[in-house]
Length: 112
Length: 111
Image (cartoon, rainbow over all chains, first blue to last red; front, side):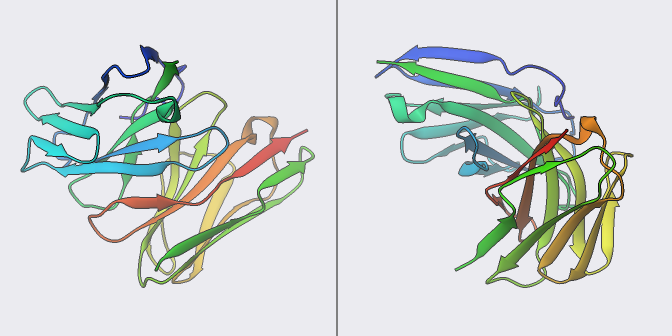
């Protein structure tokens, strides 16, 4: 479900380290999941997606892992860079493919 | 290619005044359309979504309404704004079963 009323959790990493951002989803009928990156004052930007028939998908420097058993999603960023500093949201799409709901988000700060 | 336009970028409105935010999409047909609100430092709250002209699903009961008068136009309205309506409003579009693309948002401040 949505956690829009909570302050964002934060993750601080050193430049060059790997980052892991976690997300729990609530709807067991959700079959499509998306990670977004949002920079201050801008709309969210697509990073990577995964369908429920997969448990892992890789992009450029990013990997998404899906564990349907515990309804958990994670985003791994390799060799984190200062430009990766932003808020990261996971989103789930319900089984009817119409609504799209977001998790609470995580603020990632990369220290030089 | 598809593009989404959302305006205005910023808006300051007095309490009790009406609101109309517009969102249009180009380069696609019959998209799903969404309105979200984001309070400062918080997550995205789904307000409305639409799967077709005149079809609106409301997620949160409040003094806002949405309309879809044309296939690629989505409008967020209010007859009388409240202080609590302040926030960052985001419009998005998506093809069925695929990722959504967001506009640049409207920062609304109700004073």
